[in-house]
Image 1 (cartoon, rainbow, N blue to C red):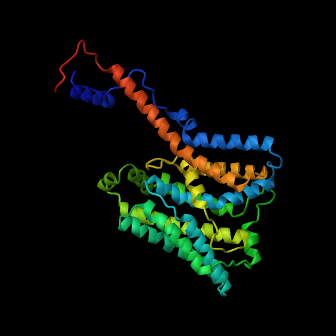
Image 2 (image 1 turned 135 degrees about the vertical axis):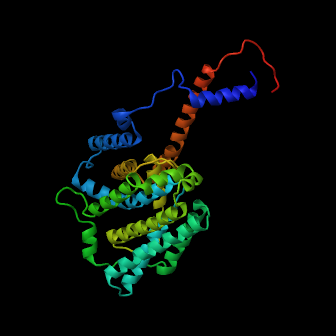
Image 3 (image 1 turned 90 degrees about the vertical axis):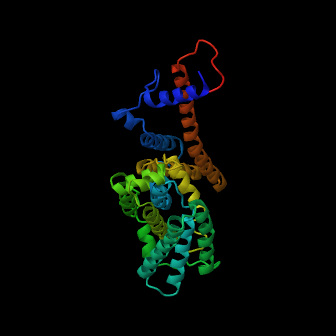
Length: 363
C-alpha cells in the first residue's frame, strides 16, 4: 500500500467508521454527572468539607461573609471574561479598568461630586475604556492579547495621573456599611444578590440565546461564524464594552468595601480572573466553556486562598498557588486531548487492512 493510499484509508477510517474499542460518548445523566461543571462543583464541595474539618474557625458565618466579600470582584469580572475567552479572545486590562474607576471615583468625591453621580460617571468611564478596547480589537482588527496588554499599562497609568500617589478614604460610611452588610445571621453579603443577578444575566445570555450560541461558533471559526450570518465585529465590540462596565462595578465595589480609592487598587486581579475562567473549563483556544463551571471555579479558588490565609500562609504563596492553578488549567486539557488523539490513531491503525508483502515505494 502506498503512502497516499495509507493516508486516504486513515482519513476514511477516522471519519466514516465506528472503530472497535472506540469509547462510546456519554449520554443522559452520566454526561451531566461526569461533565466538567459537575466535577468542579464536586471538587468545591469536597474542598469546603475538608477545610471545615481540619482548619479551625473555617466553618462559621464569619468565614462565609469574608470569603464571599473577597471573591465578589473576581466573580463579577469572570462573567464577561468567560464570554470573551469562549470567542477565542482575552481581556487583560480588566484590573486596570477597575483601578482607573476607583481612582476616578475618589477624585470626584473629593472634588465635591454627589456620591451617586460620581458612581454613575465612574461606570461610564469603565464602559468607555471597554469600548476603546472593543474598537481596536473588533473594528481595527488588532490582536486582543496585544491590545489589552497595552491598555493594561495605559489605564493603570491614567489612574496614577488622575489621583497620583494619594488616597481618598473619607467616603460616606453608609456606603461601606451597605457593601459589607450581611443577610441576617447567614454571613452572606447583601450585595451577593446583585452579583448573582449579574451571573444569571450572563448565564442566560450565553446558554439560552442565539447571541450566546454565536459566541461558541466564533470560538471554533470566525470565518464560519461570518458565513452563517453572525456579526462577529459587533459581537466582539459589545463583549468588551460589557467587560469594561462590569470591571467598573468591581472597581466601585473595591473602593467602597475598603473605603479607599488608590491608583493600585485591584492590581494583579486579572491573573486570578483568567485562572478561574480556565480552571472552570473554558478553553483558552475558544469554543468551549460554561458559566456554572466558572462560578464553581471562582468559589474554589477563593476558598483555597481564604483557607491558606487562615493558616497564616504568606501572600507570595497565594500568588504561586494561583499561578499553578492557571498552568494546570491550561496544560491538563491539552494533555488529555493529546492522549485521546493518540489512542484514536492507534485504534485506526489496528483497523487498517494489512498488506501481505512490501508494496511499491512510489505513488
